[in-house]
Length: 272
Length: 278
Image: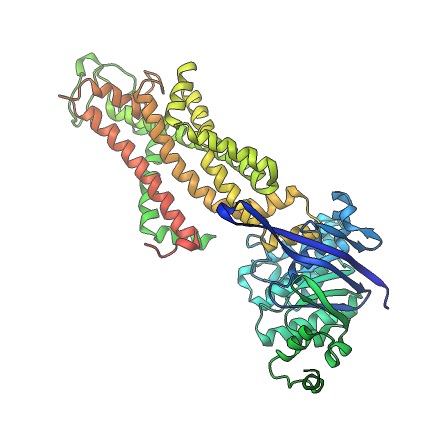
């Protein structure tokens, strides 16, 4: 159960930023500064941090959507950065992503059926009728109806669109799903439904989640392990219970205290 | 999308442009049926007649019926406009897509090429090129096309730069899509709206350039009629045969106006950022 499936070692990612007189000087902003994380098979690793802490950059670097400056991402025994384009495309089937903004993550000019089937089409999995069957099965599993396949994304609400995004990622039966703040753009009442759905699917399909969020309330519900990021670094990492009960870092304590409606931790007063 | 079209027809700007263009297009297509005379038939007994019932727009210095020539000239003007802009838009889409998608040095090379082309006054470039070639309607279309692709290139590049960072394009990459799929299934269909607007606006300026070239005798050659060379013929008689200059002038004006109105109207309707500005 605790076999590592996705390991990132010493990831560094900098963005160039122009500054100085006439924008001639070039400074580098470190979005990821020696980040190492490990996701175990069947578990959920939550990456927590405030805006600008590098969480989304981490997600995109893990998926090779952005090039890394240095460090390696190990997935199924491969260093993803060293794969050729073709090998990488093949391996993407097992490494999927659910995006943050359900309004930006679906192509407005494609029908829902086409959106969900895209991965099957790309990887040429099964005949057209098998693909169709899988798509129908998946769309029903995420709580939409078969008739919805003919509709366009703008006809759905945010929560429904996020279900479509989940269906698109999971129809490929991946091993790891990176969820980049999948519920932060949704109403609180919808958030719980989507989180529940993600959790059920995890059990059914033996998925491992890398769950990126800024909301510690969400973490408690879904995570086994937590990594806390601050200014591009992982400041604290551990399993969810011990982190909540005895946070080691000042920053983690502050984060925990910032949860609305949560009473100050007993140990916090003593610690200072 | 059908909603948008209906919305476009409710926009007074787009609607008036559409009516003008549609009317001219209809006249051009039906020219052989409507034209009362052969546009090139010379009638020495009817030289420089003012507009009348027999000759609604009068006759020219060779006794040809101006109305018939105007109708056939419309075909030339619209054909040149649409084909030339078609060429320009195709080049622009290809170069802009490459530039915006791959970025890096390819982008730098293409953009500098655009800058160089833009730094040359287009009309004079066309004049110079046409001077070397035999003036014919095909040469004009190609030359106008090859000298007016820069705007579309920049437009498509900008669209692609912004689309490349959009989540649905990244989602496709995450699924394992190749460049081809991302460009043609995801990015190009989502940049069609501004491309369409620039196409319509481009036709307006191409029509104008064609008229200008024909007026200078470097465009469509006699006896074939074009609005530009009808104007040239009229120039000699302008003091006593106003109809030779007025009608082609108005036709050019209306066409250019129509395309501009349609283009601007479409932009207002299709681009959410400029909605309700009028």
